[in-house]
Image (cartoon, rainbow, N blue to C red; front, side, top):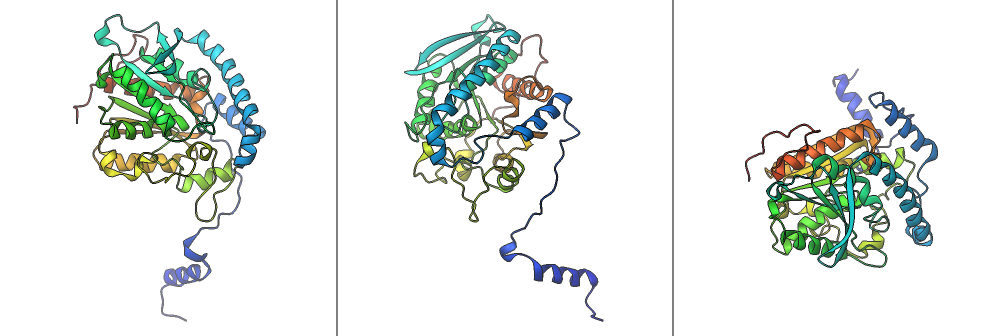
Length: 368
């Protein structure tokens, strides 16, 4: 009998059979719907599993071939959702141009009358930088946020691929931001977005720093972090769970966003600000929202940890059992919770009060 302790023998045996380079081989298993979800969210998750995402396994050649129908289908779905949102939320929509860029100004009827108390949020829609519009995907979150904060929201119609390439979108957001700065101080302006719009929010902050513009008072990176390629464990796990394309052995994965980015260095801080500590040290208070079934979870967690380590104000909220961009379905109780989190965050850091129908924010943090 060997004199080695049993635990060491077991460890030695496990090491002998372990895959090369510590790569874990994960067996398949059945993943039930989370019991913590509301009945509405449970039904939404079941429906997503049953029906799937028709774009989940499309390579970029297939995306290009189907891009017109993807764009039209996305917009048509969004317009139906927007019609319902307008019945629920008291807002007015105005198509305008700010800094030469088309925007939809979402004006809440709950906006304060006193100009000193008025605030502005810039919203950047999702869609992998190739589909979606300010007046479609953009309004899905701009309308609830405007109504619940009492703040004016500008949904930006930024340029996308494949017709345009990086940094076109960052330039467009900066043009809108300059126009906003002509009306309000930076401390009274916030910026946020979901998915590609969340990525673009981080890229826009990087662009503002490059252009030596003052940072806005607050930012929201929703369903996105500071790495434009969404790295980390969750990229693999969620690809398997969502029956999507798995990354290659080296961790790379062709993504729709490549049709906008082209041949860029994804560690360039203007593309992925998480890789630059000097840049992150300039970030305003930042809110992250994601879910445990979201491919961006690892990316978001890493970005949040970097900001916290640099002593920046950073809030991370993770919703159990929900996936990428879940809050765009405003009917879900969990989405309503997420919008309340957003409203309180922006009110707190932009130094104003929420409309009377919503809870007042906590006292504002001391400026850094």
